[in-house]
Image (cartoon, rainbow over all chains, first blue to last red; front, top):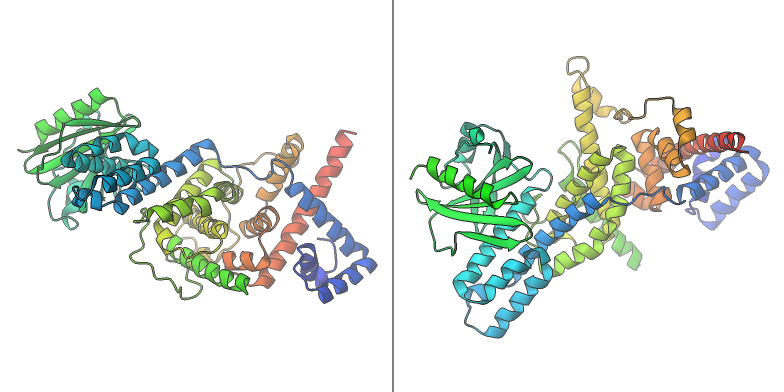
Length: 266
Length: 231
């Protein structure tokens, strides 16, 4: 930069309005007698105008804003569910309370509102709807950068031991690469107040999250479409509950389920 | 008075975010007052009120976050990932949010994510045996090669005013890029920039002088050239 080296920093202070009155006067007096510094000052002001001109600052692209929106909605759905636990635990404490809880998360998570509709009727269905909501939120969350897998491998023999020290059960890990469902990896997720195994498969460009935990409760109809393009299938086998969540075509997910059932030890 | 207290909480948040969002190589500025329970990168258990505030305080600054990420990384796809990742972390850490400027907060996380990314690129680019790792770590001016390898003057002449400015900023080293963006585009104060970049205010000023010197001269030359070409 042209201008006196000794005055450089104070000159910046003047340009940025960060000097007190005494120092500002001092720098201005110097500028009046120094062509090089006053040129540097004029250049900086000219540059500022250019930098604050149209199109220099860019806006976030649609692809990014929709990812961020999905992320916040998933958090809102989780928050709304956490904020309304009384409606589940004490369903008969009053219809009003349940209604309020329902509208609470209907408003918060538009994407998941459809499955909330299931929740008003009876208690088991409400629990199921919340579980489904949990699963879809887990699926959505998993697609955010870096969250798909904690262990990235296409090898079932690596995924299974990885879960070993982290869960109190051993999820069956089935390789379906030959059927067009390669394994991407595995991770832990938190569904229905417990840590579960999530095994991530791919079908073309779509991701399938397979959630596994022990037990087999009454979980309502074997398939659900809570809206927003996701399909959920569930089944039990070998003492484990399986939930598959994906946006693949439903027939693909059905095929996936059949293949898994056939290859999972009973 | 009110200003200084909000600034104090901003610094706590910024320091906390820096600790949370950085790789271990980056040490904390000061002991954070906030000690959030089990911070994780995954969206934490927020209340509906907190998620609403997250929208109002942090999500609204997505454009500023992307602008910073893009000017720093100079690659749209990398910038998107950096911002997305920064928001995952911000959401995960938001239960510890106690007020302060949400824009500075998210920009700090974005900046830290950028340097994480840059460090990864540098490690990939450095032949491990040719120089000791510490040496590479100290190299503050290391930058990922710019995509624009053709004759810069020629490329500049074809661009719009905004495009030419982008190209000029992109040629600065990262520490000068960030200071010019934070000051001239985000209009942050020296104090805010110093907190965000973990530098003394004097360094902020001397970097601004260098950045402005390089940019203003190039900009004047560019404008003069345009005036020649299109009288």
